[in-house]
Length: 271
Image 1 (tube, rainbow, N blue to C red):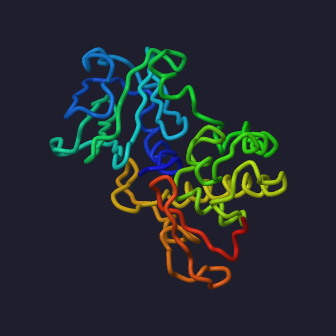
Image 2 (cartoon, rainbow, N blue to C red; image 1 turned 30 degrees about the vertical axis):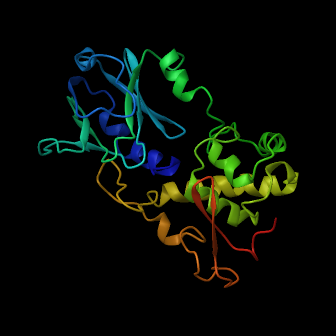
Image 3 (cartoon, helix red, strand yellow; image 1 turned 135 degrees about the vertical axis):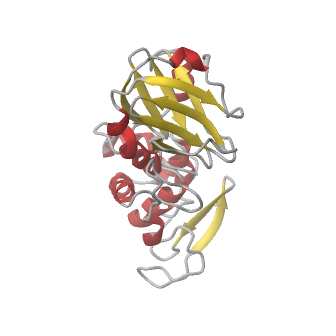
């Protein structure tokens, strides 16, 4: 599933190229997770102002309205010209004066939703409960520790929940917890202020490094240029069950938490 770094990498790969484009046509394929929210022809003639990100959502600002794009479990966005005819997994195509934006999503858990603006009911339904952006200035160590003190569930689950901090998905939660030396099963409220500060720094470091490496390509993720990511090749624990820890050589362990695989080192990560 594309996580925050993959969404940010996608944004960076086409935001500058589509800015200022005029929408010439919009075509929908098979139904996605949520309906578009307006007739596709209603978007024709509008101008793309900018592309932002909120958590795992791409926000395409128009001169009249907003498009929210979610990549779901298997989606990817491409932008360019000279594309072949849409394939069976291409479910959204927006032709603009500067190129064509496509969403390819084999499992159709992604979505493109039109909203009047970010404060509208349609946008708030998707964005309203999202936590602080981990790469933004509002994500501070003290506030993060206070949020953890209120939660009795394991820290890995809190990170995935998206309310204390948004966008730290499964891969990067495992990696950040390893870097901070915290066992993923540790109850969030038990984490001390110094350890929370370590985790805060680790989250920022891991996510920033992942963006630099182009994200992680585990199956079919690619950016809007069609390029794969390489962060997974440098992972310390994720998907390395049974392999020696890169720090202490102890075999990496794997457990299931909330139907997701968690990877950790029993020596380097303390409860």
